Length: 204
Image (cartoon, rainbow, N blue to C red; front, side, top):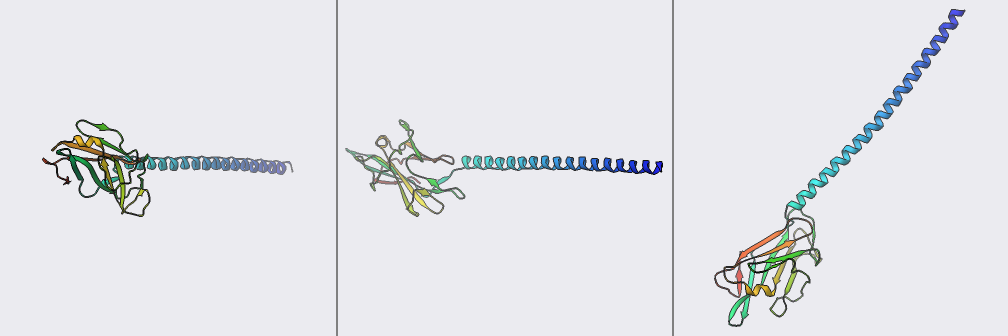
């Protein structure tokens, strides 16, 4: 009888020990699963952020806009000689790029030549179709598009820069107009004037 009781108690103790071990193992599994889930989420989050950083770097390194066709310069009579009146650049959004805001304050237009460097000449959007000496400024105009202020894929825009500093440009002189959108690298347009100034000049 005593042996039977001892065996029963031993079995009960063994069963309790096995149950406790199972509970401990289950706890370890649950903790490990929770830890693995946290690590996996952190890894996915880090991968996503890394992808965003890479994409942002690509967007900043590549040009968001590009020129289309020729650059046209116009000259007018300034006394007995001709002087450059304005320069027109045609441009579009690059393939795969997001729409770009072309309003004043979102687009910076700089001008450089051998005597002048102006950080931003695009401070107001003129409405006159042609810039003359009496109304210098910058005209940003949509040629093909949906009539909003964003340049999108498939649209064609032009920018005409006509500032008084251009009147000092001499034949064969080099000038530079840079378009700086909020996103993307700078579009640099550098051209050399022909040996003689004509009313309309195709600078290619």
